[in-house]
Length: 365
Image 1 (cartoon, one colour):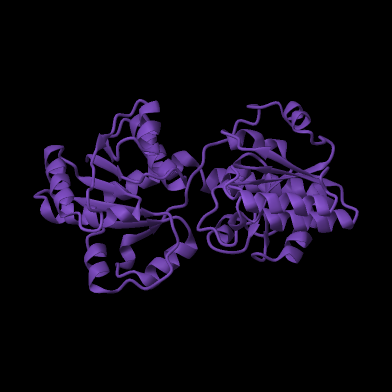
Image 2 (image 1 turned 180 degrees about the vertical axis):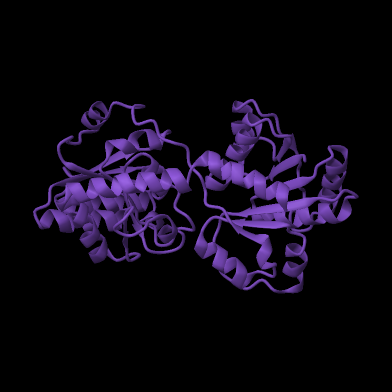
């Protein structure tokens, strides 16, 4: 069975990295596959860095891709493709039309990374989804929404959690890293990873930490990520200064290998209002770090409250403060959550297991 990884996205986020990592696994596991991408994109450049040579397709009119679909159909026939694995919703119509136009019997496997928010039972979407052989979702919440919103057979919807690689805890000298960052190795250290913008909730963490400091708690926070919203970042710094907690909050910039520094913290928090999955959580869990996340979207699928981590009511600073105090006050409890979280993540969120199951689902459908 020849697999075609198909992603014409020009973005550079988690969806694109997932498509790249899938190709990397297929290559390393010697599967028969090809990759079709858009030229000079993040995906194209990353694949070349992995010595994976993609083919290209340029779509002139994405909203009406008839000519491109005919070209793709010819590509499928020439290269004897059996399975197309898609990720980006804007590729959906193009791939379905190519399936209709080709003489080959093609299976479409669609991994959905983003949330579903509305019913799609019109004629257009019924046409699209009747051509999908396997619709893969990354959380229980997304599975329920797929059944609710989409015109697709239940047996064609499959839950497949994202996987993350194991973390080498010795990849970095944490004492040196913490010291160079200006933080104190002897204090409780909390980290929040992600783009610096309101949606990621750094302001919630700052407010909760300010509450804890007022209660006499001794802790520090590392904020790690690209500054995407300069006005938001400026307001965040103003709040930190106004509350006199400059010595407790540290902006540590973007880190190219975030998982390598996760073991340098006691806990990692995900404060987004509602994440479809929340990849940073299993990454931190596999790094042996306690996690805390908002009780929304795919996060409750990752964290078992007070067993493998902590959940707080989404956007509720008071509840976030309460949950954080549990691990700041009780290091034994914090360590127990980290140990149980790592065991659970190693079992449920292993990258190798994920991709093995992905190929099984693609080939068996």
